[in-house]
Image (cartoon, rainbow, N blue to C red; front, side, top):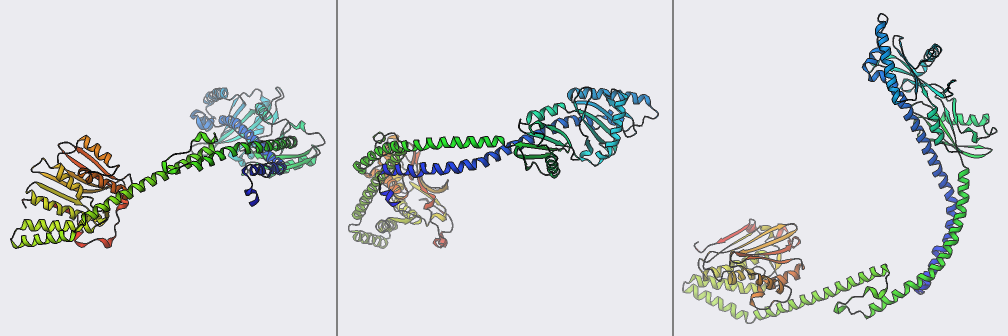
Length: 618
């Protein structure tokens, strides 16, 4: 196998076609031809069993329609009353009910013409007949009813289907039926129903459903052969007593629980398959004998067809091996050449047309171009992040120049203010000292609590500077206070509101900071009621958010936005909504995963929501 992999692509395709196509075809064709015989036999037997099931269902349907006439006393109140009435002293009513029965049977038989004769006998021995033509026929019917009544009492549904008879006048096959009728209210016996069903249409349907080389035998409930269809397909030598005995034994093994019973039968003509089932309506045993002659012809035809297919596939495999190797190696070589000359640093991609029209190669090229584009964007993003970090570090280094001198100077100012009892200057110096210390020490990450304290120090200085002008409110749930955030996140935004949003207002300047968690996103909202931003200023912010911030005005919003992109990704950052003359809302959008809460991080004094509100009048 290793030696095959070392060969050229063209030679590998050729050898693979020989090993995987031509040689296996010889073996698989032989095995498949043998297994196909059993498959065809199974499918053919299944098909014939399904045909037998359909014939059985058709017999049930035809007989059930005839049986509905026997249920007339259960459905018609007049007929029920006649079946339970003793007409010993009221012959006039008997004559009237006799006509009612006859008319009812006539109307019913218009919907079911297979019913030839109907004879009802109520519990008191009075009869109601339809289409009984002679006294001899009536006598025969009464004799049969008396003889078959005991059999019907032990039969399913109290119904007995007698052996088929032949009408001497018409030559039609007649199926006699006797059914014991029960009252629908007290389930007592109301009488008997005798009917003669025209079985000739049913025989025609069964004959049409039975194939030419198949034979159908019908045994009655006593397992006596009563009907044969297409028996001429067997010779007289085949229909011996032993064959009939085997068929009768098979019929006797059928049970009502089995859907289709199957067996085999060997005669001088060959081997036959036997299917059998029991009809639920008549309890007849229907036996189907199937010839295997068609299967033998099918097997012979299958062998010939597979031989032709094998020869065709062998020739086609050789031809395809040659042409496919030539077709596939050219675009692969072109693709290798395009990859060799590709420069991923400038974002260029491979042209699909340069490598032919093969769809698989197009998918490979699309995947490679996608990977190249992602690599280019990743390199570009990393470069921009490094530039932004370098600029931030340069700015931080600039802030650190002589920071000890500035911090000490603020402490001196604080001491002088305390000595001279000037609390405003003392407060400003304290806040400035804490601001300077925070700006120098907290980099690059701080907690949300520290960020909000920084905002409070800044607003304290502004309220001393402009008494009565500013009012601010911070409302953040306590579970968010210990989460880590990029440093200098809120102060630049608040400072932007103070310096630009409230530059033209003298009082009632309001700033609010709030937080909410929605749809797996964490929103920090910084709102003010300042002068707002124009559409041009919003566009300037959107453009500056994609490049490095320049100038004092853009360093607030754009710098924060770029740092958020660096920490959390491009889909997070600042969303600005502003209405000129009414105010601005800055939405800091972070992923919910930014919340890193540990119970040990909580402090007792911060167990309730921060809600700070400062007003100069207090």
